[in-house]
Length: 199
Length: 345
Image 1: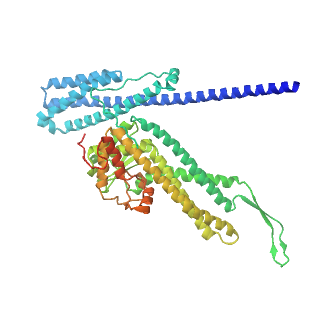
Image 2: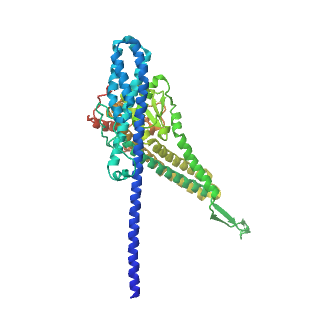
Image 3: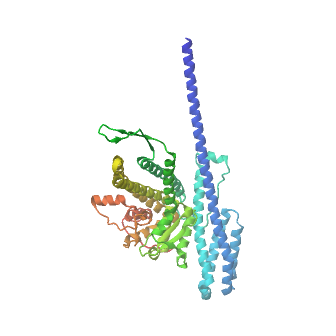
């Protein structure tokens, strides 16, 4: 009788141990999933920050080139005041921007104004022949190409980051850190869609 | 993979694959090095009894060999294997550049090339790789470097002459794909593995034929057998694996090129030009074949069994197949050609 009692106690102890182990394993698994997810979100947030820094660098670079360009054009077409003012104004508007959305909003006016400035070359052959002007024009065009590609990388990174913090498990994990949604850098023109590639 | 940063997840998979391959190569070389050390007597200790005279009148001595762990021999094999791997890892990029006689693209005539490379580096979110050119009329390009910080993109002058800016951008984006996907690290390791197996097989056969005289006859036979077995099975298997890895990575890099440039037309049109071009690189080398955008080897595509085997050993998928995939994305007839040379962007 006593022996059977002991056996029952031992087997119920065994069940408790098994349940404890299962719970422990589940908790450990949960913690591991949360940590991996957290690290992934941090990595994406850093990628977004890095992407924004890349756009910012190129915008500043273009802003540095513009005063020189305006001076050069003034030497040949001093009375085209309206065109210069538009460029200078658009430039300061973009430099005053503090968020990606503001900088993006200033992108349309600045490219349009620069386009009109470059178009002046057609009316002033001497300007068109000026080596300094051509050098600045090609540098600014190259910088605008870089802005376009930096914007592409930034917007893709933001989308990727948002997908991560808006879906499970990132949705829960993101509550334990500072993971705000970020603004897309959307200029006026329509973004070219990513073609889907499958092999 | 619906956006351009999708390749970053692929890069992480590739990084893990690199580590696995590296560990595998290290283990393989370590085992082989220790088997050789063991057969050469590095791990045995002979204890001999006092000499005695046999019934036939000869002097004899009974000796017993027993296994003795030897820390010195173990350390030497580890150092040798690790040294070999580290050296080839660090030098692989420079070796490829030297083999192909590439020179830095510094001059003003390469400003457009550097510009396109910088654009694609920005689109991929990586540091700007070094840019090299090879004076060769055959249009081709390749990327080297074990990670994006040590990367270089090399193009032939023939490529620059043949391609429009958009096509060049497609080609550079393809090479950038190899860099950000960490393909070079994986393929370099695969090449190292194949190379190491071949070297071991060679050593085995040589030791077996020339070294196995006298009392170590048995050991010699084992060396010869192991060497031959490696040559017959492991070397071709390694080469097939390397070729298969390389083919898959070419398609992945084409996909990344489309993601970075946002247009399949550039890379597609570039591949069509490469397909139509019949010149081959004047310094082709099987050692660097897997690096190029188009296989630099002049291989006749045969039919039947020979053709099938040839395709298995190819480091690149057939250009027609790569073009068909890209044309399908554009909504063009996969087997047709053109419209070529899209308008410059």
